[in-house]
Length: 201
Image (cartoon, rainbow, N blue to C red):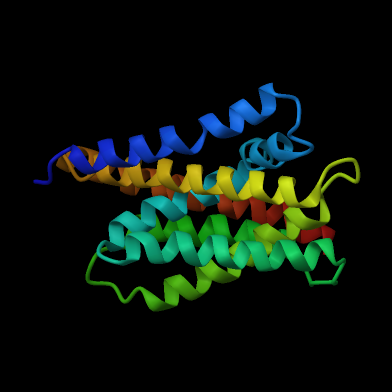
């Protein structure tokens, strides 16, 4: 059984990520920082996927704890740049919906014996889809740089939330089982998201 100390570490990281953003907002000079920060939170598909990345990274363990979030955020930034440049990518919303389904299955099935590289590749692909959607939706009234910084910070915070959830779930068998059930529910929500995205293709 692992100790709870790692969870405290993740919670501490989450705590130090957000105050500077809040201070910038209170200062009135965010010019889009808070818009970007909150964008992932208000999209349920984005929110579920980003938290799930953190959970799956903990389940895979080892260096994968950082590999998955870094792959997602890095690809998300590339996707956002493509969105800002108005480069046409096919069906990004479908990719976002599929990401929820696949990451839900990841929570259901992932463990430390599973090869991480196919998952890392998929996470990078999904990160690009999420980033592209962010990029094309950036309001004209805000600074693209600050908006992008906001959603990178927001995404990192959601990954850390997922890491905390994944770490806490290791403390008791019933929590681990509950997490697998949650993964199944995430996968079901992914099916619903996919069903909603398909008519728009």
